[in-house]
Image (cartoon, rainbow, N blue to C red; front, side):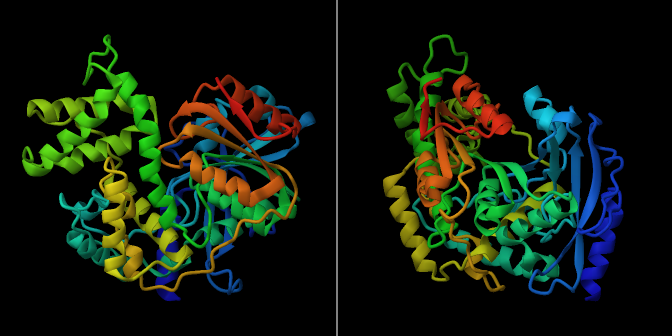
Length: 475
């Protein structure tokens, strides 16, 4: 198709990643893009089909990176770092995460990163949304739970994506990223791959272990989504309301400490009702553009790590005093456009969504009643309700295959809560062991300071040994 070819030529010109042979050929490793930090990382590209139902048709190039094993004499293979999102770049993850990996892991693996299809330097897609639409991707209902404006925006985004994003958009999905992963495996000339998958990447990792079980070596799923195909991705999004409730007590304890310059209340028990009262007050009487959803958005975005707590507290204190909320850095609009297109395409192409507005309005009102902290956002209507492309067949995670999966999970994860990870653990059966750490936040290995959790994961990557059963790490 001429239009697709034009898009791919333009994207290749921007990529500045060395060319490579086809997925079955030898890779030509070279310098990475100039905006990468040179810590021994090298880059190449891997050619994959646009449409796996038509493998002889158009192709795209995936940007791939690596840091070779530090000790080739003890090298075991490759460790792919599967990024979250959907829509997150992974090309620079080897140098960003590689420095944090224990030496015994770096000794044994080539650390591999990649930009998923449609992302970053792998033929990036964009819907060309308006600045207002791309900078307000979280769908907050109105103060009374009404979703009329959300419905209009969801339809506008779906129509704009269908009109502007090009043919690749309909072939961006979790299943296709899984197939891309196997093409990368072939290009690396590996019979099996190990991988560390994070957040949304755990869907890619669990699906790969289901569709290509014989091609897996050591599988690490870090902060796992709930992957029941009968409720995907609606349940994943709805679970965030549970996750915020799980995580909020950590913030409340921090925000009520006497020595905290951003203290918001005298006791942990007073923080939650204060937050709800301030959000309701801003719903009734916004301070300019500072409304209840501005505060709610600060809570959602500040829960993933303790470093986000000051932003939440400063926003609450601004609401109380009538001041301005703190400014939060956001990525460039081009990055937001790319993330919006890929995230929307992935969740909409993966599985069919309800098309009835009434279904979403009902779910929003129910969610608001059960989880007032998120005010129905987690159940709101996405562009998928109006998506013009047919959805693919979701993957049902299977217990059939080798017992080589280690899951690691925070007890109070706001984005991928423990309840969802436990359900995926049950679906994987004896193939998986779950390590739960007594921390709050999103992302565990080398991110939460859990001595027990990090030790168990490192031992698994180095030796292949897992605990005899599910484990709870108290520290």
